[in-house]
Length: 459
Image (cartoon, rainbow, N blue to C red; front, side, top):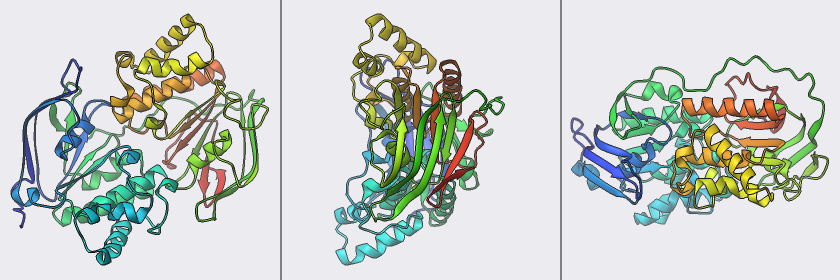
């Protein structure tokens, strides 16, 4: 069935939604239309309901009380895959163990002949710029690479509307440039795109219209007024007086699943109170490096000394904190308050001390209103805040942060960055911070390094 280029792909009228036990609706009387070949950008504060709206549009509404109308054009309603949604956290959507099987999964459900699948899978992977063999293990991919796999998995099924939740949180500049080209081609083919994005600058050339969720559940026309990247008035900090080494790594190497070095010859030294940024494109091994430094992964060569000993996680409890790139992987308690209290209880602190610490970080991150909420039902950005608060509460001497601002709006990013720099200064805490945005400036850091070509070099 052919699409009418003048008619909307879908209409939403008076849509509202409330999560169970929530006092307020996250969406209120939302009206919108999506036309073929158009790209829309949905903005709004962290936790304002962008992902909720995206899930409802894709037919994956979460549990709760909803109302309103959602009407698809006949050609869309009859399509095998009318709407494709790539969530902000790729791990919750990945089903298969290899890249090829993941992209082909939808084709299998559509009954496509097996002989026709490899060519379509290869074309979809090429379109998203992921040069991986079909048998490459999914669990060996970086978060940004996993995001590309999921885009390919929807492209291969010829979705009429593609919804991308925070691609800027997972894709490096090269990936965003490839995505912009892909979106241009999709628009030319009459496919509509909805971006839920805090930082749309790299994609402005393909965006036709902005919408904004205001934070009280209402959708209104929006516009982009400038960068959301956190900035500050910091002067470049001096390394003078930073003499005590907390971490020393020498000639580290790590081999990937294909037996090739992900990186090698890596050496670094971090001193008490020092703030270091490690940048690099998707798949260069930033997360792997952090895990090797803490003993979660064994390097294929070299040595690490941390806090005057070997990198053994049990020995480092309370003295070193790690924020994973995927916050969901380190959240397990029933409430935010219990989540932040967990590590403090394991350290044997007094109840009054625990209560004081929890109150301090809740207030510092501006999440007091979430104290009794389930961390598992929060937005991706809110989960990041909770996980960060939980690792900061014990007052670590060294904090390792894997892309800590992913999923946070500009205001929240600025708040978190200022809090971490202030905490580092006041408590003499060292930081290692990874980022897939190598072109940004980091004026609050003592040193900026870059993983490039399998080497760690000065940026």
